[in-house]
Amino acid sequence: MELMKLEIITPNGMIFDGEVKQVTLPGSEGEFGVLAHHATLVSLLETGVIVYDRADGREVAVAINSGYVKVDEEKTTCIVDGAVALSGDDTDISKALEAAKSLLKSTEASNTAIAAAVSKVEQIGKSF
Amino acid sequence: MANLKEIKRKIGSVKNTQKTTNAMKLVSSAKLKRTEELAKRSRVYAAKLTELIEEIAQKMQNSSAEGIDNVYFKDVPNPKVVDIVFITADKGLCGGFNSQTIKRVNQLIAKYKENDVKVRLRAVGRKGIDYFKFNNIELNDEVIGLSAAPDFKQAAALISEVATAYVSGETDKIVLVHNGYVNMITQEIKEDQILPIDTSKLELNKVSSSELEVEPDDDDTLLNALVKRYVEYTMYYSLIDSLAAEHSARMQAMDAATTNAKEMVKELTVKYNKARQESITTELIEIISGMESMK
Image 1 (cartoon, rainbow over the protein chains, first blue to last red):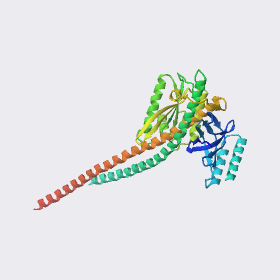
Image 2 (cartoon, chains in turn red, yellow):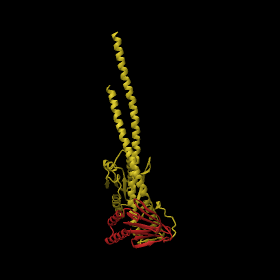
Image 3 (spheres, chains in turn cyan, orange):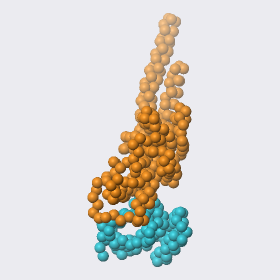
Image 4 (spheres, chains in turn yellow, orange):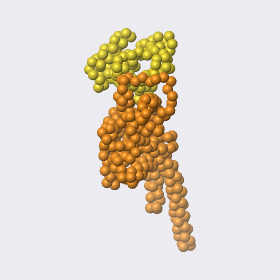
């Protein structure tokens, strides 16, 4: 599968910058997936979870509160306000899960959106 | 003899001052490193955000003939009310750091007054507040503590209040003045027009390869959200930039003070030695002349 570049940037710095196979984003108009050579697109991101497949096949999830995404043919750039990464190689996954949940709950999004995001995070937590 | 004692006491006091200034210098250089790191990390975000705004503005400009039709972009040729937000430090002992900012704000006020523009001031930092209060100049907003510890939420709250006034038409322009960090030994006054967004500063002539699709489907929603974030972030970044500049200015000032103190100790020591020799000479003369008279 062809790889594309993904950047996830928060006010506290870049949390991911690398090649991925695909990424799923929580857009304001609904969740959508992006593969390499996607048409240029700008979208608002809502409270939810970004999921991407790294080049080595590992799936990584990043819980975010809100932000923007800019997709073009070569690169996907996510500019988010707050993010917590959840990946399998974290030794302290339970702590990361807690941080992700509290980040999601602190947003102003609707309760259903938060609940959906939290349950998704919990599911990801179980899969590790 | 009294003179000798006095000089000795003076040397002691200068040496103490030297110790204090040296310690302050060390503290500032440590804090500067931390702030610099923070600034470096935030810069990436700011750059990406600006890039995104540029691209959307570009798209809107291409799609309509009259240019960008958005409240945040409309350029007011003759502003009636201008908000000036300025950042100073909470503490002094940092050379001309605060006074330079205040000077620039005063120049701006004078410039706007000339054109009959009403100026509203919003101050961040104790030093600026003190100055304008002392001179009986009205401040619309005063924030203490934010410039020493930049906090995104607080910064956002402060600037969104100003931005709301802009959107409702209360003010026509928002200018942010702060003393920014260039490198370890240089600070530079920065004056940014926050709103309306200065399109001349954006790079709007890039040719995009494909049609940009925007979701949600109306440009305004996204652009408004982006601009809001952009404004908040500019404020936050300016606070960090100002803090870095403050520390570098203080480092420099304290370095100079330490050097001066060192020199003063040297001078005083010479003076002390001279006075000591003088007193010995006088004593000797007294003894010798005493002996002479006994012969």
